Image (cartoon, rainbow, N blue to C red; front, side, top):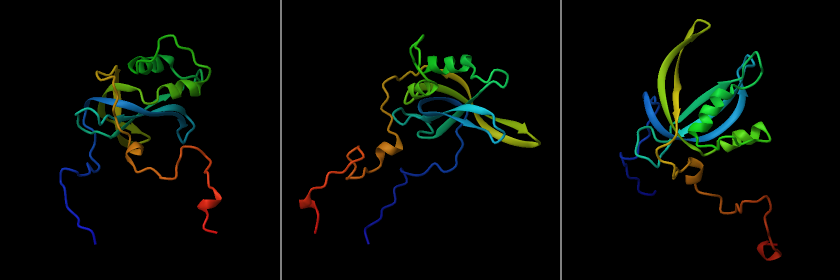
Length: 171
């Protein structure tokens, strides 16, 4: 058996809650989803950056932007605020909603979050809510996503085909 050495400088944060405060983050993904009752929303998934010294590195923060029931459209006021904080180009036009969502990917932002309680149908919930979106103070992103840190498959050449010659076969 190989030697095992404990290192308490490398410990899991466990199920700690992100504290109220302002954090440098990077938008990990943006997609559309819906609640069980059918209310549609854009879901922004941010990761607290690990390339800047701050608490809660690699923790996720989600922000939902719901479609208006009256107009069946997303409130552009919210989307514009997030886009401005993400340093997107003012006046840029997109050919599709997916193209807009894709443009948010890996953009740095500074967010202020607050833990708040809400009540829905007699149940109390604790939520981490984004209270403010601001441009980052650190536009040069060096954040390493977990998927970038994992060992890569040595046979993965980044395409769907594998080149094998007869000399590679054992028969």
